[in-house]
Image 1 (cartoon, helix red, strand yellow):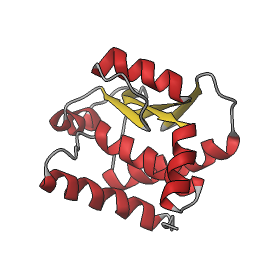
Image 2 (cartoon, helix red, strand yellow; image 1 turned 90 degrees about the vertical axis):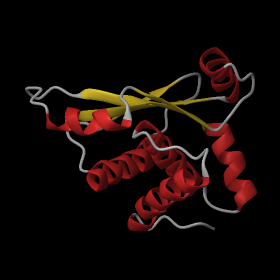
Image 3 (cartoon, one colour; image 1 turned 135 degrees about the vertical axis):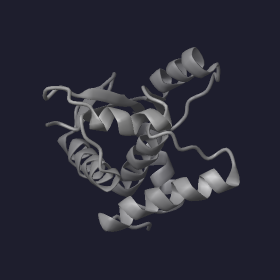
Image 4 (cartoon, helix red, strand yellow; image 1 turned 180 degrees about the vertical axis):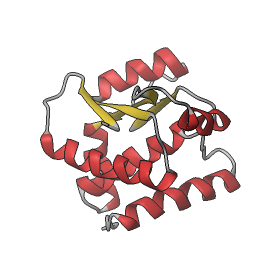
Length: 157
């Protein structure tokens, strides 16, 4: 079963991006022991992510990643237990601005691969119901993100 569907919105397809995303998302699903689910990641440009951010969050600016979960945190376990006869439910949609990923990789002094991997993991954990508004939530989310990246040997710098 495919765990990830990658789409492109006004940018060129790139198999290397897809390889990174598949590796990361497979590890996320494995670590969280998810079944019956997949996620959709759309790679796009700053103009499109700004439009989406404005439309759905009423924030009129470009950003690096947006996440749109389909379930509440406490519903995910139930979906994983359901017998869906081989069908999968979408955990949610993640939208990533590739241009912003490139910019941030430069700013933070690490590889594009590391930044793209981080955006995918960050988006995934938002779909899982994690957030970073409160300090304790932020710590829990960061710990999970770093766990995935370290298990994949994707390092900063």
